[in-house]
Image (cartoon, rainbow over all chains, first blue to last red; front, side, top):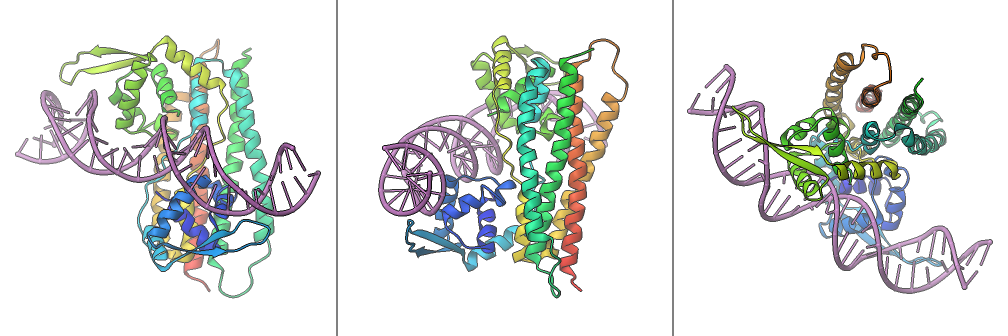
Length: 185
Length: 185
DNA sequence: GCTTGCATGTAAGAGGTTACATGATTCG
DNA sequence: CGAATCATGTAACCTCTTACATGCAAGC
C-alpha cells in the first residue's frame, strides 16, 4: 500500500499528469517501485477524491490537454504520517531463484540462456544508472546548506548501483554453476 | 503466478503438509519467495484438483493428522514447462527507498531509527545464512557426479549472502547520509 | 498510410493480505 | 492455567495484471 506514497513523493519532486507519472515509473522511480498507467490513473482518482492532490487542467497546443496534479496539504500530511510508521522489512519475490532451484529437477543447462538474458537486462541498467550519477551528482554541492532532496536521491541511486553490481556478479556465479553441472567431467 | 511453482520445487526437494510448507516459506524458501499459510492452503487445493500433486493422509500420535503432498507426474511436467518459459526481469518494490526519497519533504533525521531497524533485520539474517552454508555446504562434494540440487541450492544461498552484505553496506551509507543532513555544519 | 508519442481511461480476473475460526497437545 | 506448537481452513477485501478502447498529431 505504498503506491499512493510513491506518487506523493514523485509529485512533490515535480508536479505532473498521470501520463508523465507513468513515464517516471518506467524510469527513475520505477527502478524501485514499478507501476503501470492503469494503476496510476486509478490511484490518482482516489487520491484526488480524498483531497490528497489537486488537479489543474492544462491546455496544450499540438498535444492533447492534460490534468496536472500537485500535492495538497492533506497529502503532505498523509505522507508525513506514513514516514513515521514502521514498515515490515520487505517481502521478496525472486522468481529467478525459484527457477534455479527448480532446474535441479529438469535440465540445468537449459536455464543458461534465460539467466544470460537477465544478466543482459542488468548489464544494460548499470551504465544508465552511472550516467545518471555523472549527470546529476558529480559536481560538488554548492556551498551552504546541503540540499536534502539531492543527497537522498543520490543515496538511493547508489543503492541501485550497488544492487546491479552485486546482481551481475551473482548471475555470473549462477551461469558458471549451471555450466559446470551441464558438462560434468 | 509462481507460487505454484515454488511449491512444486519445495515438494520435489521434500514432500510435506501445508503446515510444513508454510514453515519452509517462513525460512529458507521464504527468503526469496514469501507466502502465508492461507495462500498456501488455497493453492494446494487447486493444485491437487488439477492433478499436479497427490495427497496422502498421515496419522500421527501426539499431534493432529496431516495431509502430506507430493508432486505428481503432471506437476513435474508443469514445472518443466514453466522452466522453459522466459520470465520478465523482476519488478521491484522497494518501500524503504520510497521513504528515503520522501524524507526530503519531512524530517530526514526522523527516519534514522527506522533505517536502523531494517539494518538490524538484515544483520540478523546474514549469520543465519552463513550458518546454513557452513552446515550444508562446507564439506567438499563426494567424488563422482555432482549433486545438482545441492549445487543449485548453494548458489542461491550465495546470492542471499551477497544481497545481505550489499544491503548492509548500503544501509550504513543511508544512515550516514541521514545523519549528515540532520546535523548540517 | 503506418507507427510512435501523448493522453486518458474501463473491465475482468488473478493474486495477495488480513481477520476470524477451530481444536488438540505440550511445556512451563 | 495459559501460551506455544501443530494442523487446517473460510471470508472479505484490496491490489495488481492483462486486455481492450479511444482519439489526435507528428514524422517517415
